Length: 532
Image (cartoon, rainbow, N blue to C red; front, side, top):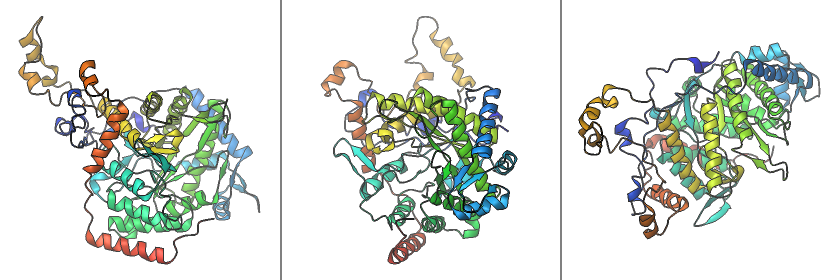
């Protein structure tokens, strides 16, 4: 069932290696660092394919063991489904549901029958068709940090998020093609009342970006508002939107082994309209899951399978993703730990499980660092390589995540974008054409020469290599004369330059007017209840 065994689609190519695209690269050579350059223009990383074969952390027997144990959990222990309407649907599908009891037990044959209806790869549609995102197979898509209560930059420090912070993070996400979609509010704009916050935020997604985006499942009214705003933003009918998934939601299990009312309502509202549901247990080994990675994976898999099965009970064939978010805690303090060897193992094993079920795989770029330092870089790079090795299709929190997800960092966003682009360049297929093999240049230079002045080099030197955003390649003397700037310094400068050069994507006036009218009407009606 593994789509990773397919041959690379001939019609889809990594654009990262295209010289015409690389010419518009960010940053420049190290010698230009710190000279007041204008804000960089991004590479156009519109389509990223994972050209690497996925790593196999577990043997087939190991995957079978976790699979069977997960189904035993659902059969014997069961899961709590707190929403009565969800239990009615589960009972109608054949699950063991008892009157007045939230605990539901699911027969393994029923679970696998329902999971078998999941469609595999699908397309998530944006208001700009050039920004449509293909999910599944070998495709990779990156979304910026989401759901942070705080944001930070070096000038203003750590603070609760505001609407302007929210909008600036959207502007950054729009400015870099390596960020394919928005995975939620990059920071909570706490200066907007919770009853109407979703209206302003979803409107901003449409106006400030032209990429796909996420809607929180925090009650039926919010889901319905989000669905209507997505329809308006694309300028389509409800019938067309049902044929073209245009919105996604993250559904988190309340680990261990529970789905609460808002999450289940979100599945019902989204799946019934053929929109994308990303089922993601959030399991921390040693806290909300067993302390062993294998045990945590059993629980993750049981929760994911139950959620995926429920989406297909709501509407067979509705798009769904298998989400994995298993890491560990610091057993001395109880604090979450990310970018750890255990996290890497869980990510890679999660990919094997998702491929077993033929469902696209969601994972994350994480770290636990509190600032932009070496820890932030190495934990995120550990996470990113696990994502690549694990065959991740959709990477949440890919840019800007710090402090275990509590803070969206403007500078970390730039660091992550640089690392994401490096990963994309690594994944670009190696050119072995006749010109790339450079036989004429080798003959011209011969033994003991150099290639600086050859025509082969002169034709390619501007585009031959990836030019990083933040790396400072000056020698020590030049770097010292420039004030010994750090990566933090460069990232601070670049995010400001990028915001200064941001260009809002065009939006049809009729769509904008309809969107504004809908938002104004819903605000006048009072928005949504702030408790459920």
